Image 1 (cartoon, rainbow, N blue to C red):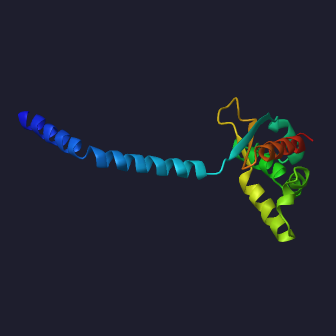
Image 2 (image 1 turned 45 degrees about the vertical axis):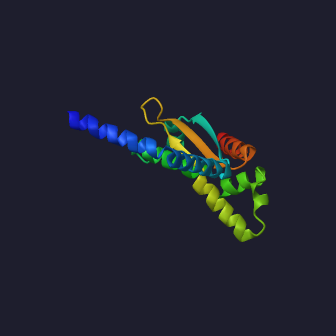
Image 3 (image 1 turned 90 degrees about the vertical axis):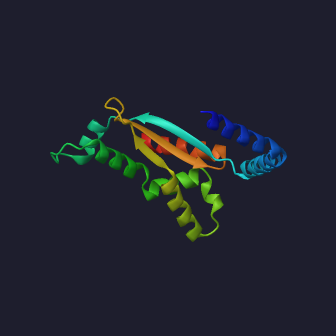
Length: 157
């Protein structure tokens, strides 16, 4: 046990001897970290939750197919309804997101990135399986809110 305390004492003396280089290294790492964090762009996320009576609405859409759908297929149908190309083009035009694209090819890539960045997820519990969450992230706060609001309005219509 005395060897253990002796070893701790030697380590503490060594750390005390090199306290100034350790302090300089800690400050350099800290300042570098602050510069890195302040250089990162702000990303805002807008989120909306909507309850959809998917059982009755999907029964109307699917007709009399006869097979009850699971939660995964419900989410897929709702996601396809919201993230279809015509809906996303409409969202891009209504929110002035299309002003970021100067060419038709850039507009196509903008719609594709919009499809990849918009999230439509379902609730995990049995009470929340018809509760859908729409999320979108952007560097502009107002644009993120406008995209989610337009998607929500489009879905309600």
